[in-house]
Image (cartoon, rainbow, N blue to C red; front, side, top):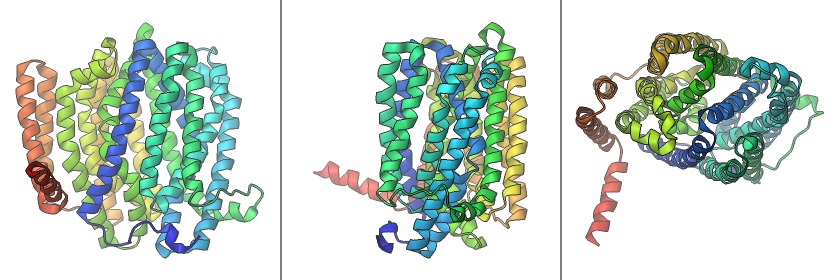
Length: 507
């Protein structure tokens, strides 16, 4: 294997077209992933109802929490270290570092698996108020190990800029998960939840191992003291990431536990409605952000130490995120009731107000997420941990309390308030700490898109008839036209696409 095999694309200054290209690539992949998820959620909602969806969500949340709590952040911090080696182009160092990453991921995965086995009775009692699900959590313990290994392999692919490979692997994983879970739920209903989750995680791990193993041959050394010591710099940065993950997943666990407590006999159903509303407002709109971790963070890490270059990379990513997110959010707000009917059973219509009111969260996230990676790219773990902790604590209490007094719509606005708080904290702190310069050239655009989104949200919440359709249609058209005009001015993609369309029409 020679140096050229590691290099998939030329290392040049990144342009608007590059950002749009990979945002489109991973956005398209995320679209396929979501389509598979939509079919799976539809099957679950029809066959298992809100309580079944809630149970799957609780199992997944616990598994992710244990993974985030024990993986030492290797799957994320590895991207920074391996990306820096990639910039230098040292083949031997890359192979050695990959072995270190895999060794640490396997060790931390085994630890997380054993931890889940040891505390499964306590987990069952805390999360579901009984011990009846102890065996389910015990059976799901290997998922923690599989998630740790998968995270390491994805980090390797992203760091070596094998972005198309990552995209293909994600498509395979999404389709495989659907093909595995659908028959199981159809034939076994609720009894198939645990086997389905086990097989899905096994399939995802196998797919990623296959693709990464073709680039760097699989090798680990659990007894090597040298690899343990080499992994310590990743661990130091990863500790902050893992604690942030613990805060985030811990906040999600607190939210679900309090929703069950405040909901009384309907507590489990409320968790199902909350999760479906969250998915509609956050998960389905996040396709715009999917390229950030795969393409953007490795580039930002590679530019570490060059303040001007970092600011340019960040501002380009913010602009692209807002350009693509704003029209999409208005479209989701307008069609939310129809989307719920298509994606879920009729009982889930209760989630519509929450999904609509939570749409502000994704707008603020578009302005914040590219900047939020700065501490991780520069290795400032304390700053990253501080900002994540503040927002997670606020969210853990704001959402349940808002739900208690104002129902699901209150929970949605509380999530939006969390996004606004995150936006203020990050832009105020990071500008001073890292000399990050926010570009004001499109401030008018950000303000206008926010006003258009706010108009759509409050109209949709107050009127479900013809007024909503007229107002939301007008705001969407205006938002879309403005975004297209800016994209056409800044990139060649729109003009190339239009040229291809005209060429087809003239044939």
